[in-house]
Image (tube, rainbow, N blue to C red):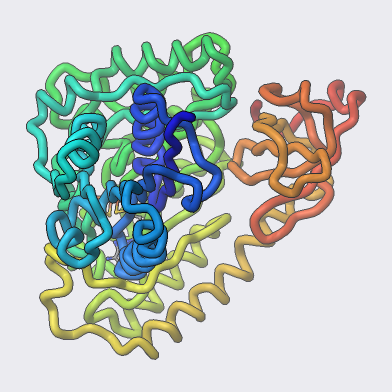
Length: 451
Ligand code: SAH
Ligand code: SF4
Ligand code: F3S
């Protein structure tokens, strides 16, 4: 019988894509996927260290696998991703049942590293960063998975060094993938049935910045958009400082670009933004929001906000609330500031008490509760184009798809609709999803927005 692997993924889109690469490498070695850790010969956690809580969760998880290793000494336990990169050898010291730690630049070496672990019973931590040329040459080709929507990596790493953020330390310097390779990959994916791609990178709109002669992000987006048979394109995550007028214009000129932008604000206070080294002021940010709205009145915004950055005063926090109120986000992801190793911010001694942080966090959520759900409720009664992605997690023969704004809509329909853009009438709006109805006769109804 073939060997089985159990792979669990934490963190952001970068890790989702890396996990696809890990799964593909393991498939080449003859592994197939196990449905639980208990039945696996190889357990891999692909980890995230963006906040301390995320890191603790990984370590807690790893301890839970210890009895499995005791029962089956042949079991191999491996840790990849950002905690692996950050901790390296220390993970082997802390967790005696872990066999292999491989960093974010060493995924391609997994087959060789696993062989050494198994044949030579070595315990290995491999977390060296690669140089730019090697990384570019090793950029993994995506394989078809039969899915309708896929991520496509256009850049890796980050050079921004926001003072709170671990990403540049665990992912390395920013590199842009050659636009020719991006376009070829999207073309191939579309040929295998993909209808929507999300261009991903930690700082996607700085694409091409440090590569002379390369397309700008707006040009790349337009080129991807024009690939025939691609129904929709999205991108994430963009940095407010790198939103160019050309990118804003894309929302007016590219009909298949989804009407949503995730634009992390982090703070509405200019003083805090400066200390975070974000490179924009609240006024700059609001100006870009206004220009995006004028290019595309139906655009919806989502954002990330950090509460309780060291030294954040009540006045700073009120500035954040004011921007949240003014933009009117459809959704926000709020995080309590978490000091990360190697970053600059935690060196400061004016950290806030957990009580103050929590109280501000709750107030921010309360404000957003009054804004976001009302935006999503506007959709009820409208007939919207939905790209049908697959069977709904809700079960009961339901399907799910997304509107241009990215919200999941569950509805009853036949599997033959998967991969199609169909008009669905929204009948209810919940916290994280909506409910819709589809009738064949809907097909003649003129949809609001784009496909
Ligand atoms: N590249 C993206 C963010 C990636 S990390 C950007 O520049 O916006 C995702 C989010 O995690 C960030 O937007 C930030 O809000 C949050 N985050 C990152 N580091 C954090 C920290 N130390 N404490 C709390 N939240 C953090
Ligand atoms: Fe982190 Fe800032 Fe880079 Fe985003 S832009 S990944 S927050 S350092
Ligand atoms: Fe987490 Fe690493 Fe992504 S720290 S957010 S998985 S780049």
